[in-house]
Image (tube, rainbow, N blue to C red; front, side):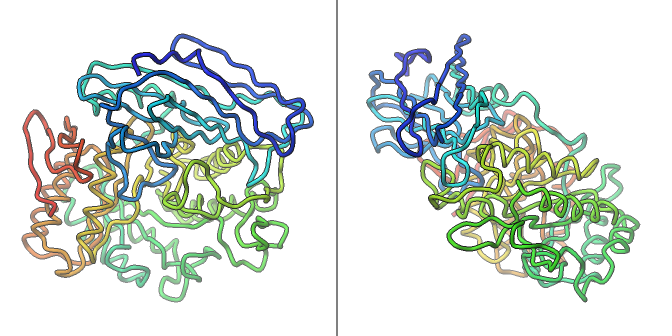
Length: 499
């Protein structure tokens, strides 16, 4: 990208129908470029920018993901062909690195592609699967930022991510502790969670910064769905939170805010997509009040952390792994409020959650990475690891930690997911390596276990102490290895055996 100039590009406007009054303005400031869209009657869908320049094929390219990644991130040769690059990308020849993307919390979804002819950016302005009704508004769609570094790619990307987000929302203390999903998989109870809490408190020892114990899916009436009231196995969630605190842990809880079977919800409160009304429409005023009431009830129970899940797939009908260069594969549908872009709707939804949570810490899972930056404390950046299959932990956990670690503390805390301990399903010789890497990664360390052996307990106690420290860490063998095994940690080279 040595021939790249941010101010030299061509652009195209795509609307529902033939464009008539859509105006696009650009403001250049050094190596940044802000894009503004104004329109009265048109329903714009996309603005596509093309930077044409000559480039060699000796580059390696790393992009980001719409929400979580799915074991699919790695540096790929430019010569292998163009692929969707959501939000930003890094291009490197191993001696210098070029980074290009958009700043966090944009009012549009933005995806890049890069090939030998140059770079293309697709700015998605839609509402649902249709053009947005801006109704005379001047919308700041996004701000592009270009940076060049004579540094290794990880360090380049780490510095670049820090420039993309002006307002990361970070906890004051290190985050660690338990989550019951990867041993219970939804089958749990009041008594089992209290036992988990006591185990986590014992493993943490006398550490002043107390561990969390997160109650994942399975505590509510319906599996993976509201109403968010306790089922018969949990009985009283307020009493459970109180007992967890007395046991020496900080209680956390899981919810899926947009999927609720409550009889209080009317059809008009739900999104109409593909002929179905299933998920709550966050642009509907009654839905907003319903969601806030759910959260405030949980706050009143005494939980200190909220993990909200599934919102991207509920809003747009697809997981990130099934998307290419746009956020939804469904055409023609829209939200109740058609005057806001999809990105604005997601941002408003995250802000509603943050406001309702008050002082609670927030984990986003299946949240849109670039939009939740600054609105969640912790973001689950990869698909699920496993307490049953080592291959899944290797593929999802190690990959997301390596290739999204640059976002840690720049956007939020990166959560590459749990160390799942379920009997002898996974050899401890493998899981203890994942535990060791997580404990030194400066990211949250969550462990899922109902019981541990003597060896496991000793390793977990040491890891919890290690997780209280700051470490200097970077993956090394990142060019041809999607699960890097060599890491620089505190000026030492550490090798892991993930096979």
